[in-house]
Length: 584
Image 1 (cartoon, helix red, strand yellow):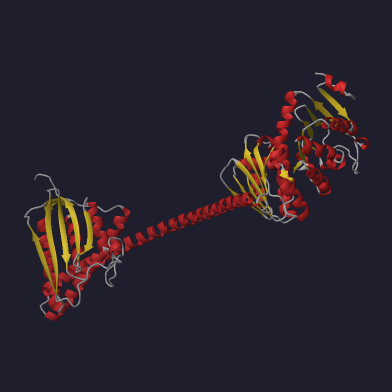
Image 2 (cartoon, helix red, strand yellow):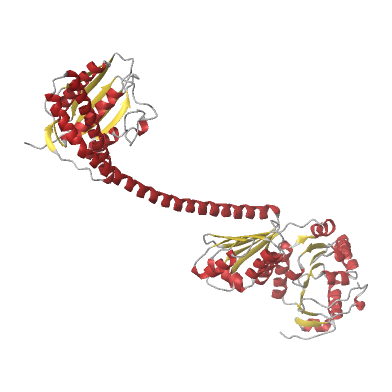
């Protein structure tokens, strides 16, 4: 292939690729080719169009109207080019708009020849020419008749044509001030970075910025994009919201940014996309191609720009959703920290409280024991009825105080995991029988003195011997707590409260004890938390009895539960214990 310069058609047939210097020579060459061309493709600046279009209008009209020809033109349509564009369209051309800095100047006639400009912005005089001879100015073109070159140029032109904006939309924008809504893929990373910076430099009110990685922050600092961002916030008072992953590598830059007014930065997880939204009107996106680099051009992958309202709004919604999500996460994290601190304080408070209660309960036991012993001796020595009753009052209340102290100590042991069981093998039938008998006798005496409603205890079992291995004192404590609970909530207008105690053996594996009463039942508000601490509506009880009872039974590998009776009268408390299979 030889490259040269020629002035006649004979020369064209010899050289398939050549250089054409000067606008006059280039236009003359193009005009002569246009005389015989049927289908033409042009990509030229609006200055060139305005300067040179008139000689081509008659040729275009003849080609389209008489020979079925066509002409596609891509140019940057500005206000001073509207007249030329309308005349060319009237003659039969199809014209689209593209930004000047993205134009790739070329001319293609049929499949015969392609022209490429070497000069990005030719020197052109302002006045339009009437014929080719009036052409002046500097320019430099290369023409080629190589089939592969023509095919490549044609494919590139048609790709630009698809991305270009219809002339009617562009003219409407220029004449009526309505911006054209576009969404386009940016062809090269240099152009992408140029748009990237331009959007930040021209932002007036708001910037929403999502960075894909911690290193991306270092890259935009190196490319002076961060400088533009800070300048927008401090000089033009643009409100800037940034979502960016943070690590040790970009920590210093993060601290610098957080000191800048009008910029709020929140840490976020790594992504694969850069999103820049300015003034809620423009959005730039770029895929992350290579995160290991510190160069923005190398890091950018596929990039897009859009000012389409639906597209921009979609990205705004996405960003604001991520922003609020991060805000909620930060608030939850802070709340969690506060809860942890509060929990530690509660634990410390509970520990101190338990220690105090433990000490207080032990201290109570010391004076209670001699009160019980001495009052019991006096009960048996005093013969005067009135004095005997006074001593009984002392004894009963000291007994109650002793049980309260024991309950407090048991709660402390249960919560501290130090509850000890002194297990022995015994017949639970006899144990329950003796407890019920003593409890019944005591309440009978109390009823006679206080003239309370009668309470009847009914104890039945079909067994004579059911061995269990357990702490007998603790089991007695459980039974007493249940009986106390049953008698405490008797209806005042009830003529007789009946407490039914039954003991059954189930499959030689466990014994089941039921305590059923016909009292007022369990309050529905108390029932779900019956076996927790302080679960009571009584003005006299502590609400510890059932908590202690359940924990004692479970410490013996048994179960305990309660329910209101189906007929709506009273409640039933039940517990189970494993049967001892040891042979004596």
